[in-house]
Amino acid sequence: MAAQFGRRLRKGAATTAVAAAAVAALSASQAPGVTVDDQGRQNTGDATSAPDATVDGDDSATGNSPYYTDLPPLSSPNPSPSAGSEAGTGAHGATEAGIPATVLDAYKKAEATLREKKPGCNLPWQLLAAIGKVESGQARGGRVTADGTTISPILGPQLDGNGFALIRDTDNGAYDGNATYDQAVGPMQFIPSTWDWAGRDGNGDGREDPNNIYDAALAAGHYLCRFDWDLSEPKDLRKAILSYNNSTDYLNTVLSWLEFYRKGTHEIPDGSGSLPADRSDDGVRPGVTPSAPGTTPPARPGTRPGKPTGSRPTPTSPAPGGGPSAPPTTPPATTPPTPTDTVGRLEDAGTASLTAMAGHTFAERISTRAETDAGKAVAKVRIRFTIVGDTDTTFAGGESVATVVTDASGVAVAPALLAGERTGAFAVQAAVVGRSLKGVAYKATVTERAADTLVRTGEKALTCVPGGEFAEPVEVRATYRGEAAGKVAVAATLVTSAEDLTENDKGPFFKDADGKAVRTLTGLRTDADGRLTLPKLYADDTAGTFLLRLTTAGGATLTVELTVAPAETPSPDPDPDPSSDPDPTPTETPAT
Image 1 (cartoon, helix red, strand yellow):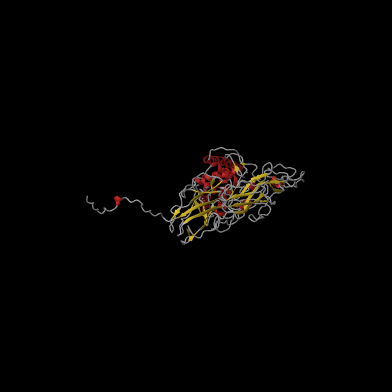
Image 2 (cartoon, one colour; image 1 turned 120 degrees about the vertical axis):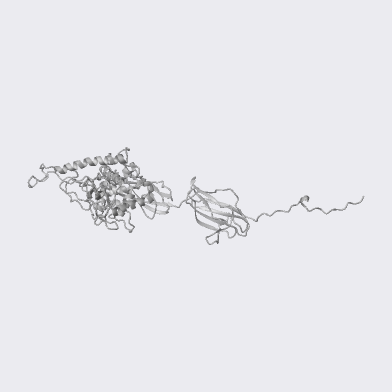
């Protein structure tokens, strides 16, 4: 026991030293402690700051589940096969420093996808590798099938509040097989309620499987890149890691592996990786051997989290030698209800009409109030807002889900909605995180892009000869409330007259793809600056003045005058210059 305690003490000191070095290498900046803003974002300061006590486990990717605390080897990340027996350079060190081939491929493919989807995030695959190492020992040393699925499910302990976070079942056991409490699932250890919205299909098989390393790595990448975080910035990097597991020790351990993998690593065969030895929950439940991910530690009814047990007999503990224990003199301790447990219902907190034009930000933000059955406000409750329906609208930051904590008045205000290009109705569902209470649905509508003003960009008269083509194109610019109206639909029709807006059957015309005359065009759109150049116009043999009418969504209209007239011919000269005539015929001079 003394030897084991000494090893842990030395390991703890090493953890502090190595983690501090990694943090210093990544950033020397200082910032305030972890908080959660009104958009559900977690803000953290330097690596030595304490985690936010208000952040519940069900608001992180892992539910703040246990993780491996082993630190990187002290030797080179690329050990030579012929190296000696120094620490970390033998066979065990090589497998500990290396990453199984399929797992490494999944991390790199996730990085490539996020580079395309969210280039501003600057996600390094080494961060996924660091988290994968800490969460599951790289999928238990790469014990995965050819498509990346773990050979057996990887499950964390049940989150029953007994030494861990308290997260009651949210998926009816669909992901973790536990219909009472949630458990973190898969090589990246997502809890079911988070995987339900964060899950991705990383290997293209049409499924989102938390036990598949390609799916899990891509989901982890998207999770770390939400809220427009830039992971090349140390402050955002720390926020993202703490949002995965709200623990300063976790942050330091991940940063240590991140710095290690950034210096280089190597590929090892699937299944040959070593499994880490030490976990953050070692000793959490006295008398119970901590389990590796994939098994559920046995529960100990009545045991309180973090309460030490000593060797001295107490009225409620067995006497030395295994004698019978005395009956308890006090009732067993019970877990006090959390704010989430006291919520009886959710109510709309005065949200007005939710309507926005495509590509614009909704002016109104959704507000939801958490109340007890008696109507009393409940603060510090996580409200999850989820966009549902056939829409490409997102919250600010590009995600379809946002989690916000209620304030002192019990109100959670969702991040602003950003309308996509897809028009029509959709809904936003508000629900209490970790509870199966009835939620609140908010209807929202995206309308077509519109313009309220349409003008020509030039002033030159538009003329053409019969049977010819107009040399000057028709160019217009659309605006909405004084700003350029980009991507606005425009229709153009050659009308009969200002009073008769039916299509004219003679005069100027456009040509379709087959070269046939058409006098109405639809599907035209302005560019990002609100400008549009119409196709070339032609004229038939009819002379006269004609009208081209342009209309947009939003009611903007413009009428352009077109003139078709024969070319001017030179007029006869009424007073020719005699000097230009041929020499005159000589005339006779009369005799005198």
